[in-house]
Length: 75
Image (cartoon, rainbow, N blue to C red):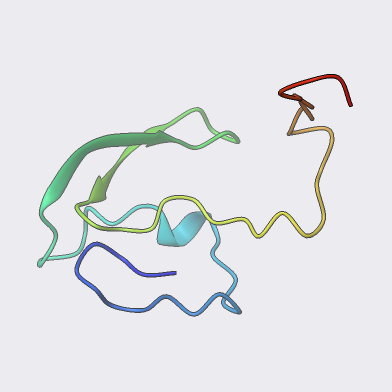
């Protein structure tokens, strides 16, 4: 994956809730995007170009995602 600034994000890296709060970063240009911590309900700001979501969908968690199958014609 790549950020908007072109820097590569290592997909082997585990991203946890601590990386989501970037308002302490002095080089941060705040984005209009807000994220909500699902554990605390706290809304956080993110930096422009920051990765806010990553999933390779290799192990689909059916409690989070709903599978939708669509066909252009009869299967």
